[in-house]
Image (cartoon, rainbow, N blue to C red; front, side, top):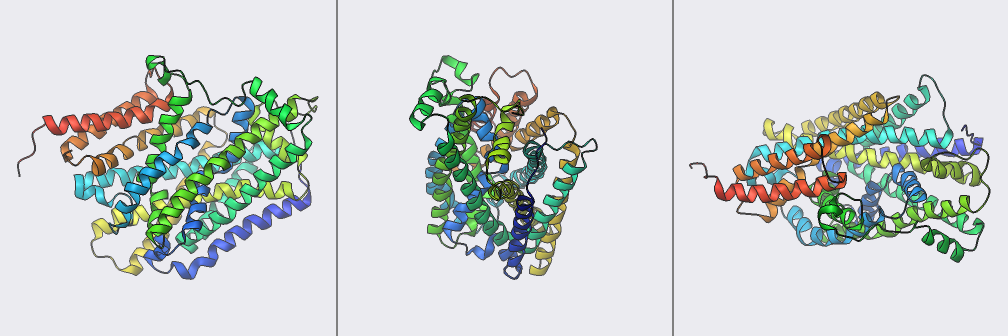
Amino acid sequence: MQMSLHSIDITIIVVYILGVAGFGAYFYRRANSIEGFALGSRSLPGWALGLSILGTYLSSISFLANAGKTYADDWNPFVFSLTLPVAAVIASLVFIPFYRNGSYRTAYQHLEARFGYWARGYASACLILLQISRIAVVLYLVVLAMDQLLGWQSDDNSQQVYLMVGLGVLTILYTVVGGMEAVVWTDVVQTIVLTFGALFCVGLLWVNLPVPINEALTIATEAGKTSLGSFEWNGWQWLAEKGFWLVFLFGIIENLRNFGADQNYVQRILAAKTDRDAQVSLWMGALVYIPLSALFFLLGTMLWVFYTQQPLPADFPATADQVFPYFIVNELPTGVTGLVIAAVLAAGMSTLDSSINASANVWVTDFYCRFKGEVSEAAQLTQIRIVTVVIGVLGIGFGLLMIGGSKSTLDVWWQISAALGGGMLGVFLLAVFMPFVTARGSMVGVASGIAVVFWGSFGDFPFNGLAVAPMATGTILFVAALASVLLPKPAA
């Protein structure tokens, strides 16, 4: 399926991507201190941080893959979005005051005082490795998205390599120059453009559906396309099937990890001008994501009605993931097609810049300054810029290794990510909510949780993969509490 773009669309894509990179570089003068580079001098408005959080949640993969999921299946993944208010309430009451009253620069500094440096070092190392893998995966999936959009066919994969390197280098450049403010304000632009693109696509589909909208919804509902999944419990069987309750539990755990233990999100809480701005940013990101994700899922449902209620074109794609890209290239007017594709690429950049900036901040704060002792402002700023480049390049390098590989390569990366992140939320919850847990008990608990993650990722796991994170977190809390009571405390 080879697709071609009008020269106007190509021009829009190039100008938009370069414009985003140039806009990010504009914030160079505001990133001339370590606080400015890492946290935007703690002066950013809540609405902008909220859109930035939204941009971190969204990605080019959300834009394309969510529509593909609902085209092929139903609205079951939307249940994940419905858990955001639950996590936001806990974050508002606990996480925001905890971090902002502690003068922290990363999410992991408090772990050392609670359990010793092992906990801080463990969580920080996991975060950095997770973000490097995330950079690689996002770049790889952006390449796959462009394959779907443009039908690239190249024996040597040269087009994919050029796109990955170019997109990665541009993101590194404006991130290393503009720091946190560049990340936030470029996220604002990209989120707005991506939302506009989704709204335009839904509107165009609405007008051009082959049947009236009420009939279209009836057809989709009767076909099970709007289902949120099974509500049955069936003993332990609900953990084996991807129904409503398993996705809901998984969403609560993942969103608590995002707001409480992921530097990408905690960094935005810390960068807010006031406590109220921090609250606004969190609730804006959480609440706006619900209708926005619904918009992406609605796209998939409307695409299903659009193409199944009329004869299919001769070149119609064979897989569900390719249907929305096919629609973008063949149905959108010239100019809008280029803007939507540019938004897909820019959404990938907004995910990358967050990962790069957060990882560099964690390295400098939790490793470099921790072991160097007194470090000058200039030395910290130099170090964080060097590490920004290094982390970005590592992400690009691992992403290049994925090109041309099998799907199993991507699966392995996600398994590694699950293994690295499996204990992060658990150790954080122990530190904040369970004051009686000892350092020794926390180590035993985290070790047991990691064992559960490896069992779920690589062993003969009898449940659905979404059950791994909740089971690992629960295991950490239970075993740590039990070990703290049973194991003797070390002599003073």
